[in-house]
Image 1 (cartoon, one colour):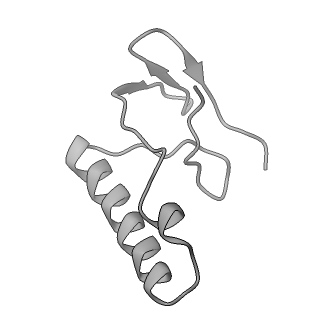
Image 2: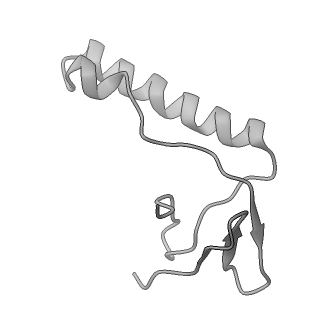
Length: 77
């Protein structure tokens, strides 16, 4: 398992609340469904997501740590 949402500087994106993270995923799904309706995506791709939400601790250097102790840091861009 690897975090996949990173900003333009390679820093892992985190959200202040679970609700904020859920809204981000919902907005992405809505955009994918709009693309399906416009004929730009197939339905299977537009209606699913592999995203999930995990609570993490954010360290001062931007590294995050999951509840099971895995740490992930900035990725070079």
